[in-house]
Length: 450
Image (cartoon, rainbow, N blue to C red; front, side, top):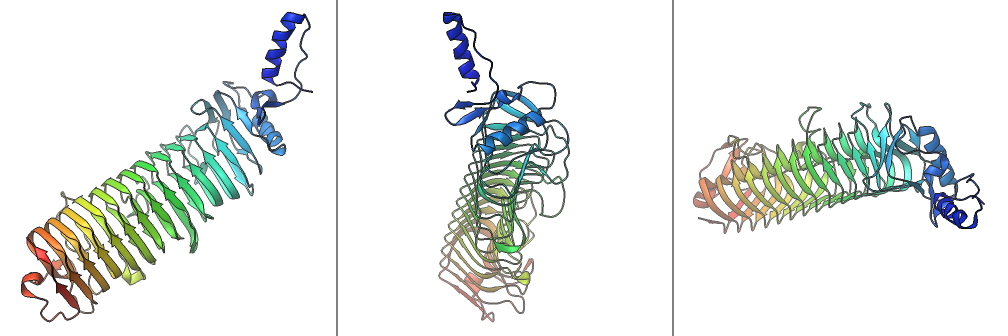
């Protein structure tokens, strides 16, 4: 029977007493009751040469035995390791470092269920890789990546496609493109990760075509998301959900994104709840284009060009609840550009209830209803709006639909509490004082201004 390193050391100690020399180990044996030691396969920490070949052999043999492969402390130069089904790699957190030797991924898997990575650090050395993740997993079920660090990826940090499982408690730093990129997921859990300095996106949940996704993005900390790829919103978002339905984005802490904290594009039945967001360059919370169903509740936004936008009724965007949020310090630097523009706390268009929110210190309009003729069946009740030029603006363009504005408290509106708007321009007097006049589609009642 073959001995592992621990057994060899014990044998040496025994030999010193008995005078019998130990036999050399000839093959890998369990490092403990549950794992194999990579060093027994010839994998050398700190070696100057590429360790890919020997480490691949170790991965394959450990996976064949359905045992974890334990990678000790040190640096290992590798490229394009392939993970078979059942592969389990375990490192010493912060000490077991896999460093990219040349352009490619460090690890990838295809059609490989039950893969697990934990306690490993992956360093891409900023080597440019077109559209790939430093760790890249395709069409695999029950994936687990936990407690790993991904640094300096030349494109994406972790990329997964057609995957179910869990990405949790990882740190992804300075990815050139997206820190964590999921496409076509099957009920993926992305939780308690730290993302810093992503080049174009923090966490992206995308689908090739609109459909059920079911990913949960919860408890992540995402900071300093840039938009190096340019554009007008496809880059620069801390969390971006595109075409994916039934996604929950909950309890995340987001700071400093070039565009939005959370952006849902054609993302039906999205829930955006309990997130803390600050220092955003554009609309903080976005539900846009061809979506049906959005719940945006109990979030805090401090510092953005706009607080929340539920928009694009012209493209089929409809059906939302905006409730219990706090929006403050909404673009004090930007000029007041009217409904739908910068400095708006809450902007909605169709089939939406806006209730129990607080907007404090917005540069243009506290709550904006509709844009041009794009307004239908909106209620605004029980909100507090403070320190704004216009408290509530509602579209009165020909063709605009019904709105109910009642039981709101508007404090410190410098120009008017509630006004009719034509696109970005106020065209009526204060509807609280003057009534709705000929605008029979509007109900304005029981609002208090001070």
